[in-house]
Figure 1 (cartoon, rainbow, N blue to C red):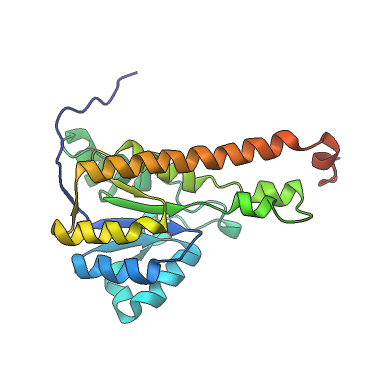
Figure 2: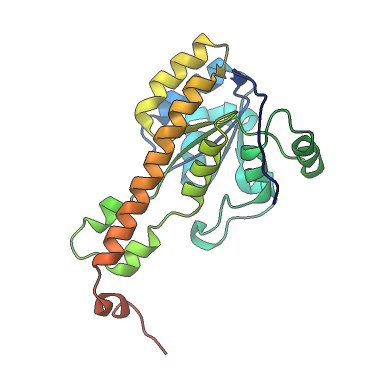
Length: 226
């Protein structure tokens, strides 16, 4: 199996396309207007409740800047939002490398765009299982799949993509974009990648620890097995 080994990148990457899908929507009311202010041509791809929150923040400007992920991919969300972002076009856009001609051809072939920033935080698993009387099934339903995949993909491609997982970083991010004509630099993307992998590692640790503590009767008691 061949490896993608990169020896040439752009230090600064203009943020033209952003994918946003967050459980914690705090700070969006400041982040979204700032992104549009920094780049008046920016396009924001989003899903579900996050799409609705951003649409409200943007108001009349939503038509220009906001794109439903399902409209972009051509695949509607499944029941209950079970599958929203797990799509070839999404991950091609995140993982595309600047100087890879094959990737450029794939973008053209699929009418996809390179995604320059991913703003994602995950389902509240830890806070869910901390509540009194939570069943194993309720815990299972709060295991995020698409979120960690987007975080990991964008963090892996820190060569070009900024992976933002914590609303506390929005202010620093906006200041940097304003100072760099709407671009991120490699040092920032690398720092954000470290935080992203810490985020998913902690998330998976919570899940593993919780499941390991459950007695078999707690698991089987949630279901009517036939």
